[in-house]
Image 1: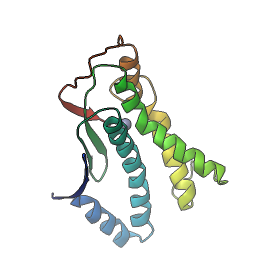
Image 2 (image 1 turned 30 degrees about the vertical axis):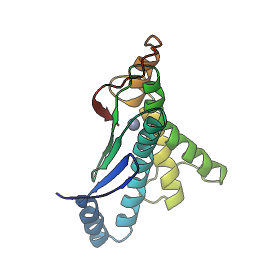
Image 3 (image 1 turned 45 degrees about the vertical axis):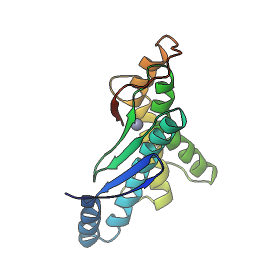
Length: 166
Ligand SMILES: [Zn+2]
């Protein structure tokens, strides 16, 4: 499967061609499904871009965001100190800030996702992604942030090898 992408400075963003194929198939099966799928994918894009942008802001030299049809990942440089906690928290924080903005606009989350209006669907997806990724356990963002925060402060600003943050 091919990739389409672009670069802005030190940030590279790549999308799988499979996304367009899946959106087209969903649209063909039932027209509202294609746009709803792309709307949900935007939640993932916001999450991964936040990881990448905060990494670059905190001293990373390069970040690559890759979006597959069902998931995404931000390849950023590991950091030996607590900056890694901020990078890990950036993704869920972006989702929760967007969800908060939508809630301030009067929208409310729902469990009836199949029939939800686009704004409600977006709010619910951002809220779910932000909240679930903050659980301080295992390889998810919350667990990574917890481990990084417990590290001793390190004045060494060198970076390790590239690694994944989801
Ligand atoms: Zn993440």
